[in-house]
Length: 115
Length: 115
Image 1 (cartoon, rainbow over the protein chains, first blue to last red):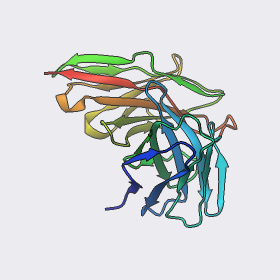
Image 2 (image 1 turned 90 degrees about the vertical axis):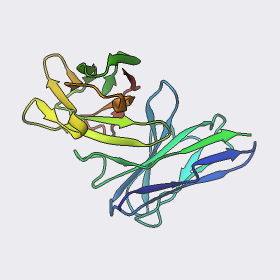
Image 3 (image 1 turned 30 degrees about the horizontal axis):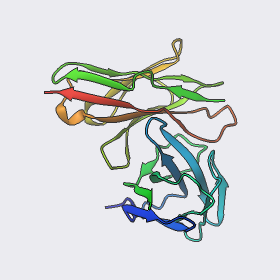
């Protein structure tokens, strides 16, 4: 079955440490996204990528970095500069980019906590 | 700018009764509107979308939504609620004419169906 796989499901970060969240899709979608979900705040866009080797900042990019070297993969690094990283992180993809009417397909998320 | 509001943090409904989850939006042009559902510790699943055409949109699992341009609303409905419908529901909007190339999500409404 096609879909989006996020790993790990749970992740713990020590102070001063960078951690990387994995996102892989086999839907052959061009566009991929990272969202942060906090209770009562809905989803906030961190970064998005509409094609390989290109990505743009979303609304809350500070303290995060991404890469898009392959169509299937869009890893997110939470750096030590992100002072409040505890959240549920969701990766998504869609057939076309943000300039479309296609829905997004989501992975099952990674829950990041601080040790 | 585009925005979306879900005025109810939680909706309680008895099993078998009709349910409504409210959503209002603000865009400069004609909106693309989406509803998603999220079960605990899972990603979002697409339910339905409005792009153009009939104001009543039918989606997955017996859900439907009514687009009302004059009231700028897109309420989610189901004629007979099931206990398994209990989840978190998100409304999302995009303004394809507004030059804002992102989807904005509401803060979510928790639906509790009581047996």
